[in-house]
Image 1 (cartoon, rainbow, N blue to C red):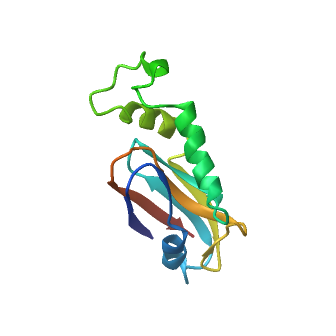
Image 2: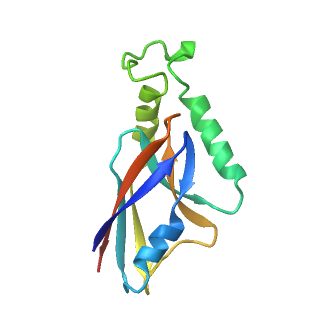
Length: 137
């Protein structure tokens, strides 16, 4: 089984779509769910979904680790014509996963108590991101 989730982003940050995935898996039995994001400037993460400060801190950490090309420390970058956040977004996506594998048991993703599935948008502008889901028995 396959489907595609479209996730609307409004700028850099983490966007949880666990409910959408859980709804789609319902009643499907056991298997392995693979999620794959079809873009080069965002990532997929399984992360804590109880305290929103976790998402705030992750965003701040990666912004500090890979600032925009307007930061003097990034002057060596040459891919700058798509905006000061584009190449840093590619670097962040290269550092984080673009696909996830999640066991599904009795039609439910087998996530931990505080785990959620997130798209991590690395660009400042709004985007429509596509995540392809494949469930194999």
